[in-house]
Amino acid sequence: MKQKFDVITSTCVPLPLENVDTDQIIPARFLKATDKEGFGENLFRDWRYNKDGSPKKDFVLNDPTYGGCILVAGKNFGSGSSREHAAWAIAGYGFRVVISSFFADIHKNNELNNFVLPVVVSEQFLAELFESIKQNPKMEVKVDLPNQTVTNLATGKSEQFEINGYKKHCLINGLDDIDYLLENKDKIETWEAQNK
Image 1: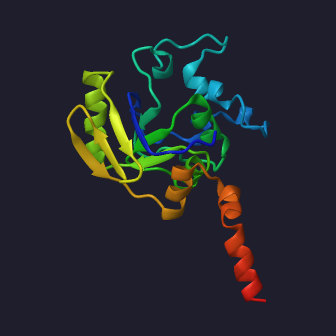
Image 2: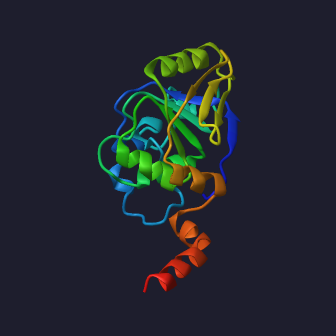
């Protein structure tokens, strides 16, 4: 799942629901696994499938009208338990970006650790995105990590978003925390030698 992140332009999948918690993202019965593989197929499992395993036609992930690697979600996305499996499911499905007006902090960090960029926008910008997608499901959004901007290409409107400088560096370079330490091994060893 490690992927370098620069500029992504994509159509979007709209999920205009507020207070989506991690149990809705990935139900607790799937948490026994310790391997990240296969979680994408169970993303939003109970919303996405009937009890017999057949797809619910009215759920957005089953609607061929929508696609792309950007999920646009309502306010307070990822609340509830701190399960990292929720971020595994989002990344495993193929989403690279989640846009919302508010994320639960732990979930936001879990997304970053799994090479998914959580982009916080104003409620007005989010509402406009939902409206643009409703008007034209093929409209695109451009997410520029180096410049920390998100642009609704249907309207041309942009917003800046915040990101921790360390996490930005890791995403742009495709590094997890261990990779980052290994990248700086010489500096660490030099510091240790000088500070015995």
